[in-house]
Figure 1 (cartoon, one colour):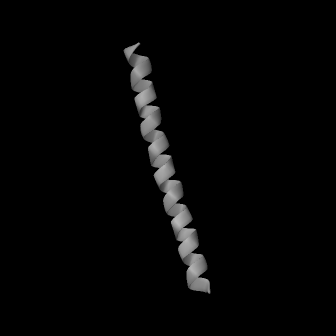
Figure 2: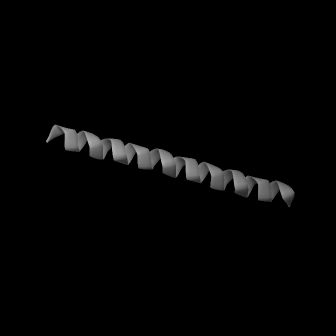
Length: 37
């Protein structure tokens, strides 16, 4: 049971990291589009 909980926590943490990274990528894309104009 504890193992399962730990797994869920790690997954949630990983999910947050992925969201942060994709958010940053999106911001970078937006920035490059703006700088091209």
